[in-house]
Image (cartoon, rainbow, N blue to C red; front, side, top):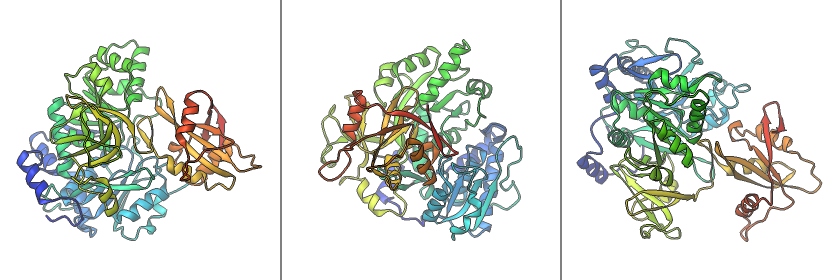
Amino acid sequence: MISPMLTLLSRQKLEQYYASGYWRGDTIFSLVRHHATTIPDKVAVRDRSREITYRELASRAEALSASFKAAGLQPGNRVAVWLSSRIEVAISLVACSHGGYVCCPSLHRDHTSPEVIELMERMRAAAFIGEAGHGADAPRCDIFADLDRVPTLKTVFKLGPVDGHDELPLPSAGAVSGGTFNPDPNIVVYLAFTSGTTGRPKGVMHSDNTLLANARAMIADWQFGQHSVIYTMSPLSHNLGLGSLIMALAAGGELVVHDLRRGASTLDRIIEVGATFIVGVPTHAMDLLTEMKARKMASPGRVRGFRISGASAPREVIAQLIETGVMPQSGYGMTEAGSHHYTRMDDSADRVVQTSGRACDGYEVKIFSQDDANREVPVGEIGQIGGRGASLMIGYFDDQQANDEAFNADGWFMTGDIGRLDQDGYLQITGRKKDLIIRGGHNIYPARIENLAMQHPEISRAAALPVPDQRLGEKVCLAVMLKPGSALTSDDVLDYLDRSGLSRYDMPEYYLRLDAIPLTASGKILKRDIMAQVSEGKLAPVPVRFVPRGKAVVA
């Protein structure tokens, strides 16, 4: 099948990756269909109240794909999915792989309805699968009432919350004839929106083959199989969570999503489902160890591995996991290229703590000069991280400028991160070229917070800064310089950000009022000077907490 979407795919890449075996003839759907034949009654995906077998997943996906076709969708049309982590996300992805449609499940819980509508307009969504009451502004906004703003929509599925309902609300097996399925693993199947330094989302396009190349490498290196039960702490709307789903489906294993009710025990759930591998961020590992210690438990059941992403885990966390019989895996990746760097099962604790591992089969990384993206630097020297390989995206959606700017002259994807490689190929991340704050694995883009704050008539300058946090890694501090005579308080600022559309998940948790915020000669705010003064104790940010009623209280 010829892709109806413009991508960076070339005949040279096809020949290279097929010859090496990193790309194959399988699609996500064809693998699920194979498992539906060989292990039909094995559980494929489990949420807090339901489970779906491979037989059911294949038939449900085929029925949903047929519903798309009956509604007038054509191969290459986009399917927007705004759901919590639940079985229907898996059905939607496998259905799109079946019919040649493009699944976009990267509409997050912390998005607002207007933000999702804007993304749907940009992708020209032909179908929408949404969950009532989902999203950062759910108490006051109903996205289903605003779908007329997306003229390209042909069909809509409105799902209620999971909450113990056994029935799957999407089309059932046999309800609609599925017809033939898409056999081409090289067309776009997955569209994920990820922001750059400006905070404007870019649409990352992946094929079945780019997604499966990374999954196959991880399966081989960490010995996943039909016995594996992968427990993802990361939501399925995030690339880490979706990658866990694809890895489980490719291996014929089981994926369990982390969707517990508030106050429920994560440790009990992990033991109950027989999890063998956990995917999360350092905060998740710390919380699990804390619960184990409080309950005097020596191990978390059958768990033997823990992928820790988003930030480096403290040495004591790594040591404690190993003591419990769990081998931590540190890694490095991104939506554009998957989880292409990671430590192996036999790597030392020092490797896990000090590095992000080495590249998986089918991917390679080089370090380039920070001043010249076309000049490679010697081993051990710090520079820009560039990569290429079988798991790399096939381009940004509808964004030729982003495609042009993302690669150097020799076709290496420039990540925007800074690091160095040692003699053995292990990568150490030393910084981010991108302006980004990572709170417990959640990416927060300072530019959006600053742009909204600067629209307040009493704020002259604003800077969103990272403040170190032992548990979450980083939190947001908003530094403001008020206009003369202003009596604006932190409560007022947080309330204004909320009313301006900032997600509550991105809200500043520290506040700093400054008499002056320095600028560079070109007029840019000198954040590093403010951050240095905070680090040295010369400035003391005040903790604040946003309350949805429009008030913030000192924590």
